[in-house]
Length: 110
Length: 119
Image (tube, rainbow over all chains, first blue to last red; front, top):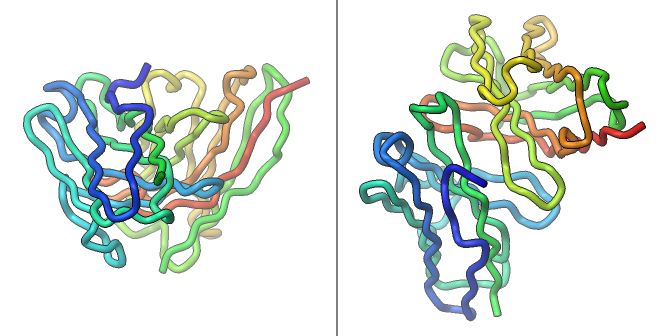
């Protein structure tokens, strides 16, 4: 059972906009910044969004992040088949005193 | 651009110690701006942060693994290492090394190394 809760799956058709949620508590998301990672099949995770809504160099602006209270969201607009991947949220947990990850959301492009 | 590469045995017997090394290129592990982490992923499951080390030698571990984990630096080789003792089948996972910076776990990742615990 992950400290951060993500839906196990999400889907959309090409061109659609999809959002993936990440729910936590006051000891993690509520008081700390959130990062998002993309893990393509058979590869290592890659940093997609940091500090709630910042994109590393090279990440297209179709990816966006937001945070409100004890929840965060990742949005992907203009969905493409290449976006099929697992997506993870992560933040620091002040109670556990360590980094914690969500359980991951498998995104399928129909 | 910084690159990380894990190396070590792919098979470890139960009760023994898992040992992995991460070689960093394109950047120095002695930079004070970064931390150097290990993160693992059991087959078909999610990510679990194991711990990090700073160039100063300061470490911080996941409380759930703290009693079994040691992360160390080899500055002359630009490497850092993971040791996980008393392993069981539940420690079977892909182990990733990664670079952290303030507020971000894993801005760069290695490709991962599968370690299987089995007799």
